[in-house]
Image (tube, rainbow, N blue to C red; front, side, top):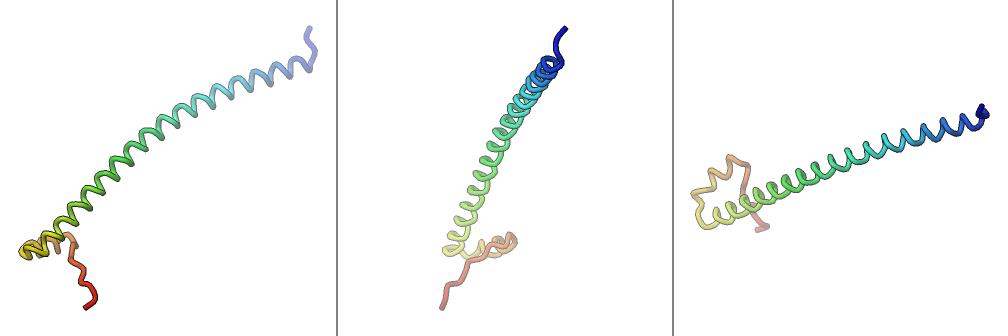
Amino acid sequence: MKSGTSMILQGALALCLVLSIVFSIQFIMLTREARTLSSQVAMANMYQNTIRSLAVDCLQYGTKNPAILPMLKTFNLELKQGPQ
C-alpha cells in the first residue's frame, strides 16, 4: 500500500497536469481571438484613414470649386479660416 504523502504528491501532480492542459487550451483560444481582433482593428484603421483622406481631398476641392461647400456642410466638413 502506498504511503499518504505519496498519494498527496500524485494528486498534486495530477492537478498540475490538468491545470496546465486547461491553461494551454485557454492560451491558444485567446491568442487566436487576439489575432482576429488585431486584423479587424487594422481594417478599421485603414477604413478611417481612407475616409479622412477623402474628406481632406473634398475640402481641398472646395477651395477651387465652392459649389461643393453646401454638400460638405451636411457632413460637418468646413474649411477652417486661418487668422486674418
